[in-house]
Length: 248
Ligand SMILES: Cc1ncc(COP(=O)(O)O)c(C=O)c1O
Image 1 (cartoon, helix red, strand yellow):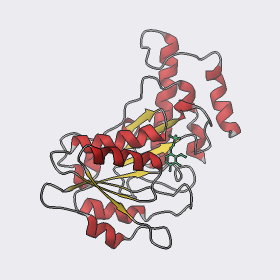
Image 2 (cartoon, rainbow, N blue to C red):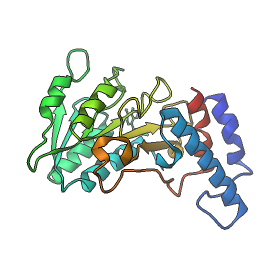
Image 3 (cartoon, helix red, strand yellow):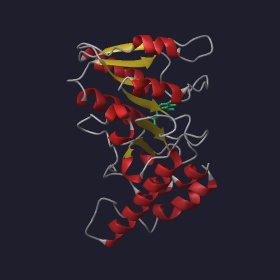
Image 4 (cartoon, rainbow, N blue to C red):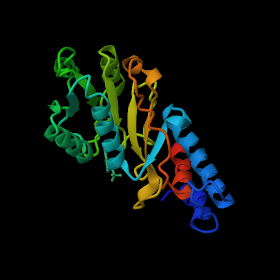
């Protein structure tokens, strides 16, 4: 663990044990303050706003929440999702589950360099009829081979077509600059445990999303994926673990 993380978290292993969701006592208020501070730090790290951050139990849950949430929310609009064959299992399993429910999923193959082809992405997008593409989910940096996808370009293509863009940025945030606005990202999943925060400890991971207003594709969206409320179970310890993430 990064020593800065340990220092920030130590109080929450002992004296500061309140539940951030408890509104009727001072221990809870103190914990809530820590969570809100973390929310701001995480938002700053990725160019989002604090109210756009949602805490989850881990990146698998974050990816599930983002992909299944969009699929459910926009099922009247279309049933097609585009991802790539080399995504993390957290994304692939979620897509497989959605296929069983009737969604169509295109798995773009990697090219020899591990990157997806932007032309193949454009060709895969469906803009007419009942099978319209509602979501593109492409990971930022690959967890096995380390390639970094051209995220800003992918996001631009999506927004030109009015499609939401989610990225699993678990292996990117805290290691390379990530900015949801510059990178044209609508929803992003990230993980404290992969960004120098706590290891082997569940609640140190979170998801983030940008508001509907940020992308043209969502200006018409009735329900924004403003996935930005804390999970009630989020502990203050997990929140402060975000501080070194920001400065990493
Ligand atoms: C790219 C990527 N996505 C998702 C995950 C799943 O993360 P978690 O174990 O927090 O659910 C990992 C884990 O290493 C990962 O590398």
